Amino acid sequence: TEIYTLSLHDALPIFQQISDKISYIPATENPLSADIGIIRDGGQTWLFDVGNGTAAIDGLSGNFQVVLSHFHQDHTGNLQRLDIQNLYVSGETRRHIGSGILVKEDLFLGGMRLFPIPSSHCKGCLGLEIDETYAFVGDALYCKAKSGEYFYSTQLLRNEIAVLKKLKAPYLLVSHHPGLVRSREEVIAELEELYAQRDMGSDIIPVGCK
Image (cartoon, rainbow, N blue to C red; front, top):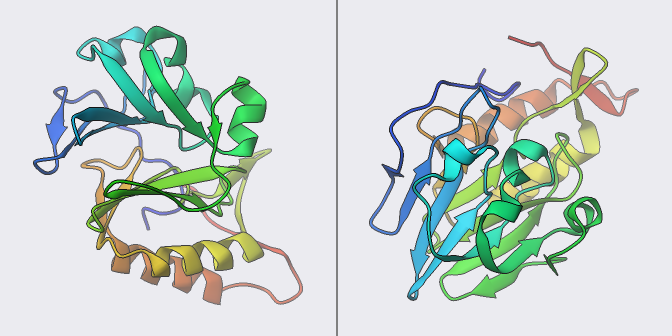
């Protein structure tokens, strides 16, 4: 299944279009850089993550509202290279980068909703739902990688499934997934299948690695 580990891909042509309102700059492997979501809303331009390395932002100019999915370098590396008006972060991300408007609970801004999302991959993940149609989730679907082992936290996985089920958007925008778009229903089904494999005597669910 595609949920288990990051599926990195080579650079694709810049600015891939998803809808009239949403486009993105695809992730790259060298340097490791996450997809950068671009949302035009109410005369403003929002970025979901800023990627890593100057090549990722060569086509970006102007003043931005930015949401960071989490603090990993491939999602935050270009922070100092962009003109950012407002930066929205979780508490854990702010602890690592030292700044940003703290998002502790659902935050509605026009047709967008910022929301915390439990994740085994990283503490302090944020998602961004747009017009109840698409929801950026960063790396939140991925497992934890530690000392060569790959696993989900049983509790966090259960909580993550609950959050995904409450979303209105039928499509999730998943960092490092080729094409970015995934069906929310399919993702939930995969995660529920993983959760069903839990061992009642363990707080983690080991998974395979591609």
